[in-house]
Amino acid sequence: MKIVHVASEIFPYLKTGGLADAVGALAGALADAGHEVSVFMPGYRAAVEHPLAGAAERRLQLRVEMGDMFMSGDVRAFSPRQNLTVYFVCREEFFDRRHPYGTPERDYEDNHHRFIFFCKGVVETLRLAELRADIVHAHDWQAALLPLLLRHAEQRHGATLAMKTVFTVHNLAFQGVFPMRSFYRTNLPGELTGIDGLEFYGQLNMMKGGLLFADRVTTVSPRYAAEIQTSEFGCGLDGVVQTRAGDIVGLLNGLDPAIWNPARDAYLPARYTAADLAGKAACRAELLRRHGLDPGFAGPVFGMVCRVTEQKGVDLVLANADFFRTARVRFILLGTGDPRLLAALRELAAGAPDRVAVAVRQDESMSHLVEAGSDFFLMPSKFEPCGLNQMYSQAYGTIPLVSRVGGLADTVTDLDENPSQGTGLMFPPTAEGLRDGLERALRLHAEPARLAAAQARGMKKDFSWTTAAKAYERLYEEAV
Ligand code: ADP
Ligand code: GLC
Image (cartoon, rainbow, N blue to C red; front, side):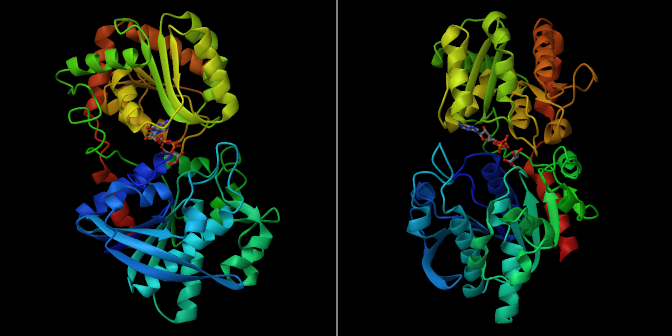
């Protein structure tokens, strides 16, 4: 099949979170399965400057209708592997910036223009290049206008651009909500400004476009597909999601074994397998040393890598500050995000410099070392559409401590509830819940045989994308 993926981030060109990993790996798995795959993302500065993109083989000039004017842009295309073409939709004014979405303080004020332009640039490229896709698969709000824009362009030009569209929700908490006056930039029919269209409390909601108008809607875990139909997790769109109740499916993300495999991981100072964990001990010592902690420390080491936000339960960690200050443990967090939470984390580290380390930066290499070198990995998320790190943890022989939500509940089995199959510890998404998880982790650490068995089970699990890619293949076939 000809499959087109559209997302605002794709690994390795730009990554702020799991969306990039998921889309990059899914596109690669589908290309490996023999499909003709194209992926589109904005030509952010970091992406255009990426070494793999250096030799962009083809360029296409774009004139994109944006309301009452046309804006120019260009598309750069290259093929990093067989069956895969990467397209960057470029316009300096919009994407040649230091950050993809905004400064650490606030979102860019023209994000509606930037992503309307991006979506329309994709449609225009499909039209000019006569790609004739079987499936156009859009991810999250930045790409959510595509189903509508495609249909509209097809009506206007009398050409089929895509047989069917699929929309995947990676995170319903980010919806792309803007003043309705920016709607005219889409050139879509005026009736779409109503409640059955893109209207959301008087504003323009881009996510709603994907939810209502894609031929198929998916989420990144089965449990999240059910959760977002409730007011607790629906972020105000639960009613809209319910209108798709009959055909929304949750397909679990996988992990890319070419990137996340402790036996081959080039970022690690030592590699290891389930049969021989010596390399993991070396990673652990290196992780502690790199953070100014005693590399010989024998007690439990807790690691965390995340966007520092309330979604990830960083406030729940802070509510348990006394545990990290006083228990015989070490805690290392790598993350960037909310300045208020970061300040509180730095304060925690400053008060217990021999126990707690906080590294505030994006660091792909260190994120691998934290996974490999920790005994326990913390993910006390308030909600989690899928979550990747709990899968990486299991593959790396690190016990995940997760809250019982979304994809976390779908991919981790609690060791106390299911002693013969457990691979992690699960608890409610509250400060007390996390505390209970931490105490249970201490007990587990004191029982090496039980711990080793849980590690071995986790490392044996199959989280590869092959399974997930097959599920998407079936979905595409059914849709077409
Ligand atoms: P989300 O997409 O909600 O942020 P996921 O668990 O799906 O959560 O994916 C997060 C991804 O981003 C993981 O691959 C994680 O290792 C990575 N990540 C998060 N923060 C950092 C950081 N500061 N440095 C490097 N990688 C990070
Ligand atoms: C989102 C979600 C995360 C998911 C990722 C990839 O960023 O927050 O749970 O793993 O998308 O699908």
